[in-house]
Image 1 (tube, rainbow, N blue to C red):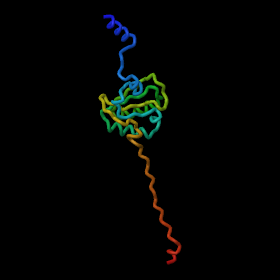
Image 2 (image 1 turned 90 degrees about the vertical axis):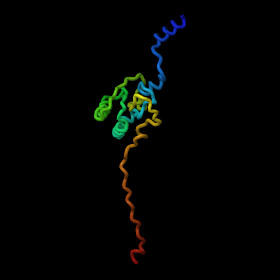
Image 3 (image 1 turned 60 degrees about the horizontal axis):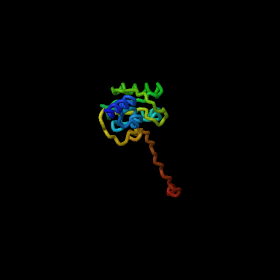
Image 4 (image 1 turned 180 degrees about the horizontal axis):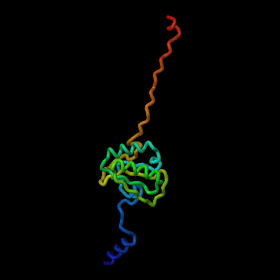
Length: 148
């Protein structure tokens, strides 16, 4: 009886225990196994990753988006417009973590476990850089061929 009472007091004082709290802190309150694509805050500032996100949202139409609450309003509104155009639900999550360029800024998630091995958007959807046309240089004809 005393153990049960002590457990209830401890639980009331510390709150409900969480599964993998460190992982949930990193991945904006969700588990890594539910993530399709991740973007750091630095990656969100690149315009080339906006087209990559559009490709990702077309690849995973049943997904939803979690955005870090410490993003600037300009960056947030840009990605909210993308999500709205693609009819993808999104949430802005306020975290207690520090907001540096390497922390996660956006996640494309599922409500079930998907076990995606690679999450980085720049690896999954590399930007299409214009292929430079390599012009074949005409080999210079030797001087003696011009004569003969």
